[in-house]
Amino acid sequence: MPTIIACFKWVIDEAYIRRGFSGDLDFSSVDYKISDYDRNAIEEAVRLKGSHGGSVIAMTVGTPEATKGVKDALSRGPDQACFIADADFNKLEPSQTAAILADVIRSRIVNYDLILCGEGSSDLYAQQVGARLAEHLEIPCISFVQKVDIDGGQVVAERRVEEGIEIVAAPLPALVTVLPEINVPRIPGVKDTLTASKKPVMTIRKGDLAPLGGARLQTVGMTAARMDRICEKFGTEAAEITRFVDALRKKAVIS
Amino acid sequence: MAGIWIFAEKREQALELLNIGRRLAAKTGTAVSALLPGNPDAARDYIAHGADEVLLLPPLAADQSCEAYLPVIVEEAKTADPDVFLCAATPRGKELAARIAARLETGLCSSCIALNYDEGGKNLEMERIAYGGAAIQKVTCLTRPVMATIPPRTFEPVTAEAGREGHIRKLPAPPPSRVRVLERKVRTRETRDITEAKVVIAVGRGFEKPEDLALARQLADALGGEIGCTRPISEENHWLPQELCIGLSGIQIKPDLYLGLGVSGQIQHVTGIRNAKVIAAVNKDENAPIFGVADFGIVGDLYDAAPKLLQELKRGS
Ligand SMILES: Cc1cc2nc3c(=O)[nH]c(=O)nc-3n(C[C@H](O)[C@H](O)[C@H](O)COP(=O)(O)OP(=O)(O)OC[C@H]3O[C@@H](n4cnc5c(N)ncnc54)[C@H](O)[C@@H]3O)c2cc1C
Image (cartoon, rainbow over all chains, first blue to last red; front, side, top):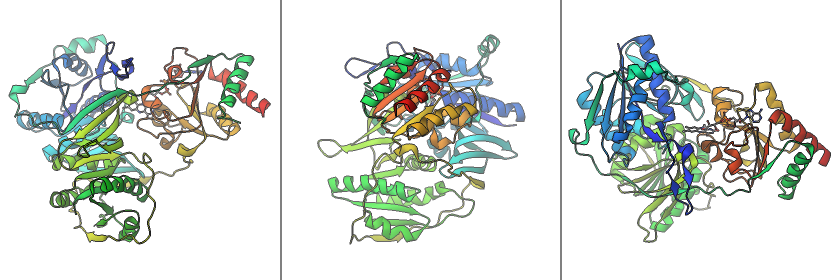
């Protein structure tokens, strides 16, 4: 029966980011969430467990505050969590996150069969951690997956490519990154939250890991994207519709 | 012949990368090498379009996909030691680039939309979209090669130059891959390219059933435009093909007029219409985020407003 690892990231909910006066990002009223596509990865891991048995480990690298995310993840069905935490882990770039995950999986998780990741995180959407992790572990990688199943000793997946769709197979253990179309993540109920708090969490600190390599990519700027628009509102009465169409004509965008 | 390397699955993407490659090579006085998968006949064409060297990747086995080139490309890159390595950000290209970067132990700027050398001409500063489109992140790569994936249609294709010369070299065939392709389903592109359309009517989840898309279509016809949509419409409802999905994970458009119907205006969608001349919207929720980024917004039910708009457009013309 398969052991499945679902990786997730606890991220800032981008919907709450405001543009500051000087074009900086205003994070003062933000909330956090499990990155959107990672919710699909967790859901898919739990779904596969439902049809093949086995167990699911939810795994994240983050700051100590991500403990909320660990609870959230566990309320979505995994059997246990692995939380790699350090106050510095909010500044990691993809190559570092992948190296940390690889280190932990190699040293502490024996005999895993499948690793599921979201195709990209909703904050930086670099789409690198899954692919890099597979390279570190020297296992096959299948990305952009919209359908997946385990069939004996292999994983069979339907992935998006430029020309359409490819159905591919790879021997286990393997890593798969999923698109949101793969499933509809559950919304945990009160009971799920209660059971989640009883599930085991393996917490790993920076000191327990092999020394972390330096960043290869350096962020030298982060500014709010500009979107200055007129923001004029109209109603649906006949006169308002005429005024709206006139406004478009004045801008010469319609004839 | 280190310098700038480019890799793309398709010719039109390669021409866009060659455009960037030539510009960077001119700045740093280096050469441009293009990896060409599959068809060796295109080598001369790539040279005419700015490649100083073409590295031919032999055709793949029937059950292989382009990431099978990974070990071949990595070996060659280790010997040639390029300064910069650009890949087209197609699904295969993105995965391949991330895995190459892992093996070469270097950094990668994903979905890079601008790249320029800094004042000293030493560091390549690369820009990308972050937080779903709310922010622009600027990065530099501290290791060699500097890697980036470039979304198709972000840069203009390069034009051919007569009399250009270059080397052509064949790389070894890739070994068998562990990921085997069992079946391919080619998507038929039934729709037109809306990236060049003057008017785009975007369909959002405010539409209740697929038949109702006729409303959007009639408006598009009246304005000589095309239809696009939000991600849930194409990916969840499958009401429209995926190549019409506008936004972060879809296409970028720059029409004179974008009109969103029943579109909430989440940042991931809006980032795809940033370059529209005028943004207009119909949404029944006056607090919908789309009104914060639209020039002209009708607060109301699209089923009420769209027919009235159509009538007004017909009356006026
Ligand atoms: C990493 C990532 C990438 C993404 N990439 C993309 C992308 O490329 N493109 C994209 O579009 N999305 C993308 N999304 C999804 C995006 O966040 C939104 O979920 C999506 O754009 C919402 O689509 P919508 O506006 O159609 O639906 P909703 O958000 O559900 O909005 C529907 C709107 O219709 C209005 N409405 C309902 N009924 C009516 C009516 N009768 N008349 C008028 N108005 C009505 C409602 O008030 C509401 O505002 C991405 C998300 C993530 C996390």
